[in-house]
Length: 263
Image 1 (tube, one colour):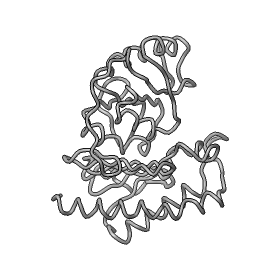
Image 2 (image 1 turned 180 degrees about the horizontal axis):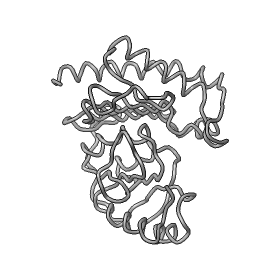
Image 3 (image 1 turned 135 degrees about the vertical axis):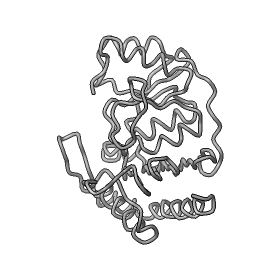
Image 4 (image 1 turned 45 degrees about the vertical axis):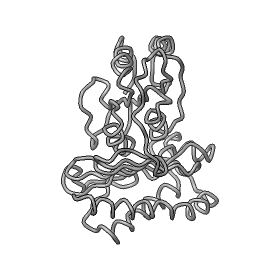
């Protein structure tokens, strides 16, 4: 795809994202929450309405594009061929419901399986993280620099303690500078983009939790792999780490000692 065509898509998507500023407040005011697999697996009218709104946007502007998203079956989608958008309409739904804080909208655009555009919109703070293939990464259109090397002993790391055994938690805390966990894979990952966190680990993500991060990792010189340190498939997901390259291997060594995490 040439630069002009990519710029046109970027312009339209960023404009669509700005329309959410007028839509989300009313959706939250009228919020209805239901559960899926269990009482902790929440979905709201906000998730569903945003996804439907984006689906309508694609039908209008890019009818040949496919949508691979959280609140649909995706059976008809071939994620590796053609133009595919991977979407999490609300990443951090529990945070939205319980806090009205720390959630985001995530979009990853792939052409024949190659990450080409990515967006993570921190709506509560009006921060838009964007990456364009071969053109870098940005926050509110200001370029992001590649984070400096960050050794584990100097790094804050992010992981869910509920899926780690006690020995692993202790060793990670001892080896690192500190621990934080936002509870939104997208927002935890943005801290790695910014160099505020050394690494974020998620042992049970879905494709829409991780798709947007691929291009940011590439453009910012970060490492994004499985927890076995192999290539990660954006359409299948699974346990993953996004990390500053200087602490990646050491985090994985700790995680993989004594079966330290649950999938």
